[in-house]
Structures are given as C-alpha cells and as structure tokens.
Image (cartoon, rainbow, N blue to C red; front, side, top):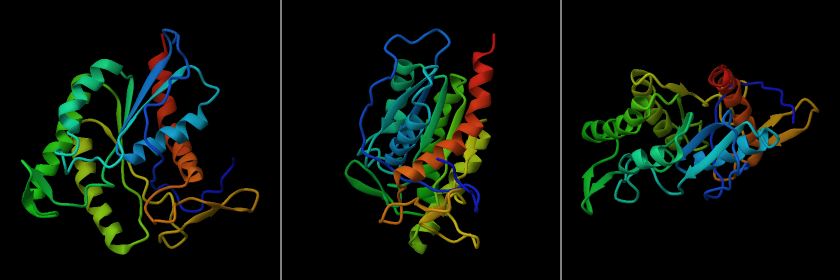
Length: 241
C-alpha cells in the first residue's frame, strides 16, 4: 500500500498478544533475528513488520509483547528481571522496544503504593528501570531501537506521553541505543492528532483505533515502513562478510 506522508512520523497502537510462530523452522546462518518486546504496542509493531516482510525469509521476527505490562508495575510483570533470560534464549541481532502505554500510574512495591506518578521519586525509579532494560542490551552489543509514544487524542494522555518520551530519549541516547520518535506519524498539517491519512490513490485510510491511543493495522503498517527505513541499513551491514 502506498502512502502520501503529509505529516512526518509518529503514532502507536497494538494488536492481540501472543508468541507468534517463526516463519522459518530452519534458519540459515545469514538469517538475522529481530526481537520485539514490551507492551501491546510492541505486539502491533510485530504485526506490521510481519506483513511487510512476509516474503523475506532472511529476517526472523520474535514476538514478545505482553499485554497490560510496562515498567511502572514490576509487580504485574518484571521486565528488567526477565529480560536477561529472554536475550539469552533468543540471541537477537536487533531489538525493538516499546513501553509506556500502561505506565501512566503510580508505582507499587510489595503490594503497596511506592511513588505517585510524575513525582521526582517516581521519575528516579522509572529511569532506573529504563536503564535496567538498556544495560543488558548494551552489554551484549545488540543494536536497539526504543520506539517512542505517539500523539494521543485526549490532551491529558498526550501530555503524559510527551512526559514519558522525555524520560526515554535521553536515557536511550546515553546508552548508545536509538530513540525512534513516532509523534508526527499521525498528525495533521497543524501537528494535531488525526485519525486518517490520504493514500496516493486519494482514499482516506484509518490510522488509529477508536480509543484514541492505539493504531489500526494500517497504522502499524505505516509504522513498520518507517522503521524499516532505519533498520534495513543495519540488517545489511550485519549480513556483510
């Protein structure tokens, strides 16, 4: 599907979670593995990339998005604690990371509230968890792309997304990884939230789900195209003799 990009890049969404079956049961030595993990948006990114690369057997996509998880609530699922074993099991060549959709909340420890959202103590704790995700990836020298949050329909939710992006970006850059902003992907000509974009055939395509936060499948396809523009040179370099 061809798109006329009238606003740049930005947006997010999700799909149903799951583990996904690898497309090749006998990967060649040249096959490169991309691990996609995080919250539900990671699952949607996996779907968009799967559709974009359906005929490319040189890339194996590992689907490890977990619905309802994030970094604010390790009592729900502790990503920093579980990531080292995941990296050891999958041995990815590239990692795509997405968090934040479920992190607009207080942190808890031992069943009790630990820090209120947006306080300095909350920020300190949250940044430590971002770093705990990035450290094992850096230690294993895995090229990592941290996908930012998109613009949201609700103004308050959008402000929180901007706040979280402001925590991700400097931590990601400091770790030598790549922050991939997607805020402008589904904005209109005035940089406001929009639900549709016009394709080169003149037809409007839906980009976002009705809840004002998530992407539609077509929106994930657009996000996958934007990601592949950045990923392809890295994949080619990794394949070079």
